[in-house]
Length: 534
Ligand code: FAD
Ligand code: NAP
Image 1 (spheres, rainbow, N blue to C red):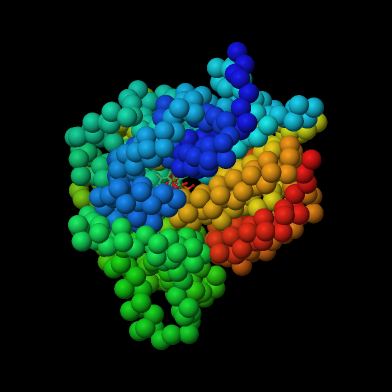
Image 2: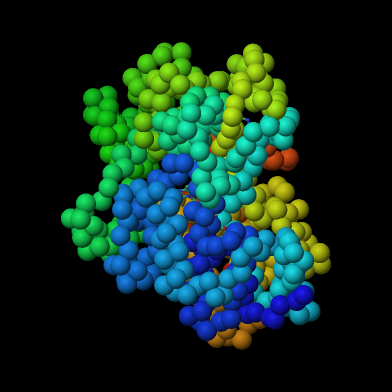
């Protein structure tokens, strides 16, 4: 049955969709959010695996738009755990009465543009339809989770869970034989948490990742007061950094300082909380191979110091990418887990997984029997949630086909050839401490919608030359980074997804959030000349 018409449809009730709804309501618009899950929260609704928490400082992650919200909310820890973040997002939804314009259990499978009517019609899994002139996608860069493409995946007789679909009621792992596939940020948090309670844990590792200590702790009452008094400075600091974290690259270059000074700095960063060691490092570490090699050698020492068995330590040292060239997982006692007698590491490059069996996992060496299997196998990043919908523009143009190679966008907010479709955190936007990026993008998109209403425009589309400019600019910004040369979800590689197994794509804007904001603000101030209105 068709729903009444709305002025805007938003897909996704994560941080982005929630804020976008709030902003459109301020314009007096009738908007409706469609969300696959049963409630708000997005990432923090779905990812309930043991140990899930921020690597952003909590007090830099929350929304900044409401002083009242900032002053009434208290983060318990410097890096909050998932239940606290979900509690926070529920609080926001209650406070701003967001749910009354949200529809849950509503996965959107298709969105089709009607040129004559200047409208998008979405179709839900249930067959239900809804339509509106504006379609705003707030799908999240990490919402399309992927299971491993291992033969026999459905044969396992016991329970098996992907970390992004962890049961709400939890899983009793006490004393159990558990196998986990994956060693990304999610797996690292899961492993270090469950190793304390399981009977035996076997970690199946394909590619080790560099990881550094999180140094989380509770926020004291004095710190709480200090945080509340300093929000303006905290958010201003985030505005000034390239990643919107509070950490900014050190102006020195690793290659310009003495080995003693270099190592003293790295020791200091390793002992400090958060991402300083990644995005607050010497400015050449993520761009100059020689500087990166020094950092990488230093980081190897840390793993060797912390892992007692030298053979295991060597297995945990990444060989195919330098320090920080993938998103750095932050850990709390991860390496020490491998000193426990109940934890084993299986390097599946040495003994490949042949199949999943009713009893467990069969490698080329032997069968490992388990009570429970965990797939910490990640996501089809950034474009995955778009690929999973049939988005059809004018003349039957398919977004999935258009983006088979690389996405074509303007500012990552409008896709070439898809009128009235606005993307929050689509490909080719700056990403870092993500809510900061989300707020800026939502504010920019809201400004665009306001402009259209004020000028009586019903249709907006990015001009081809503007898309071409952005495509070149995005590629140029990524080309100098070591990061761009490494396969990961950030470069659009996922070996579990047909067609995405190998080819790296540029899926973010890496010229920095400051420059991104400046360009976007300039476009708006000059009257959106890069867009075509009708
Ligand atoms: P999401 O939170 O992913 O929300 C998107 C929503 O859209 C989801 O609820 C999804 O169900 C819905 N959706 C998607 N497709 C459809 C469809 N077809 N139909 C209906 N609904 C749909 N970022 C940081 O900056 N700092 C961190 O510390 C951090 N930690 C993270 C930890 C984990 C475990 C993960 C997975 C990610 C983390 N991130 C972190 C990234 C995180 O995704 C963002 O911070 C942020 O939550 C993104 O918000 P969003 O609203 O854009 O997307
Ligand atoms: P991920 O980094 O992509 O890691 C997935 C892991 O699964 C990798 O180790 C991968 O190995 C492995 N894998 C996938 N398929 C496999 C297969 N068929 N066989 C064997 N191994 C397989 O995903 P993630 O750990 O979920 O993290 C994704 C992102 O979410 C992070 O980068 C981060 O942005 C965010 N996150 C943040 C936090 C936080 O601290 N706040 C926590 C979790 C997640 P390969 O590397 O060889 O492919």
